[in-house]
Amino acid sequence: MWGVTGIVGGRAHIGGTTVAPRVDATIGSDGISYKGYRVDRVQGNVVYDNGLVRIDDAQLSIGAGNAKVKGQYVVDTGDFDAIANVHALSLDTFTQDLTMPITGTVDGEVHVLGKNNQLTDLVGAIQGHQIGVRGVVLDSVKADVTHSDNLTNITMVGNMGTGSFSGYGSIQNGQVDATISGNALPLTSLSPIIGEDVAGTVSTSINVKGALDNPNVTGTVWGQEVLYKGAHFNDIHSDITLDNHVLTITNGHIGDGSGGYDITGWYNINTDALDLNAKSSCCTY
Image (cartoon, rainbow, N blue to C red; front, side):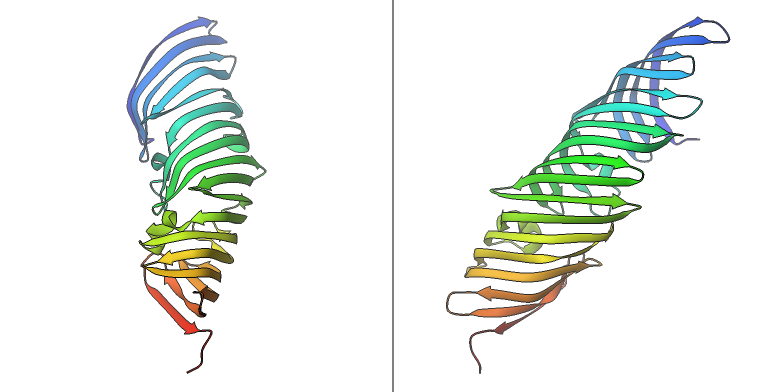
C-alpha cells in the first residue's frame, strides 16, 4: 500500500506495563526501496518508551556510501530531531529524476528538526567530491546549509581544476536567488558543453533567479589566452543570459592580437542548436 519493498528482521524485548510499555529492539533490513530510491542495508537499535521513539545508532548503507543516524520521534505530535553523518554518499541515487541529474559523492553532517511530521529547521555542513552536471565536473565543493521557516540559505566554495568559485543564495517556495563567482576556471573542464579542443581559463560573475528547475541566469564572462580549435585569442568577454534553457550572448568580444570580433547569438543547451554572429571590430569593408 505504501509502495515500500524489502526485507526487515530483528528482535525486541517488551517490558513495562500494558498501559505504558517499553520496547527495546534491534532491527535490520536489506534492499529497502521506495519510489525508485533504495537503501541497501539498515541496522540499528530502537527504543520506544512513553510515546517517544529513540534511535541511537542506526547505520544505512547506500551503494558504496553510508550514513549514521541518531534521533528521536514523538508519536503523538509528529515532532522529530535527528542528526545524520554521511560518508561517500552518491548523489546519483537522489537526483535521478531531476531534469539534470547530479553525479558525485558527499560527506558531512546534517541536523534536522520537525513538527507535525514536517521539516522546520535544518543545519548542515557538506563537502562534495567530483560533483558533475551535464558532464561538467567540480573537483570539490564545501557548502553550509541552513533551513528555517521555509527559507533555505546556502553558502559554498569550491575548486574546478586550478580554478576556484564561490557562491551564496537562498531557496524559498521552489524559487532560487543566488550569486556565483568563478575565477580562472579551466575551459578544458567545460568542454562537455562548449566542445572539445579548447584551452585557457575564464572567470565569471552571475546571478541565478527563478524556478529552481529552470532558473534565469544573467552575468558576465571573461577570459584570457583562450585556444579553440587551433585559433588563439588574447581575450574574450561577454554578457550572458540563460532563459528557458537558451543561452544568449550579447556584447561579446573576442580579441586576437591584430584586432577582434564582436559576437552575438544564442545556444540551446537542451538541443545543442547554435546561432552565432561575428563581426570584425577593426576593419570596414
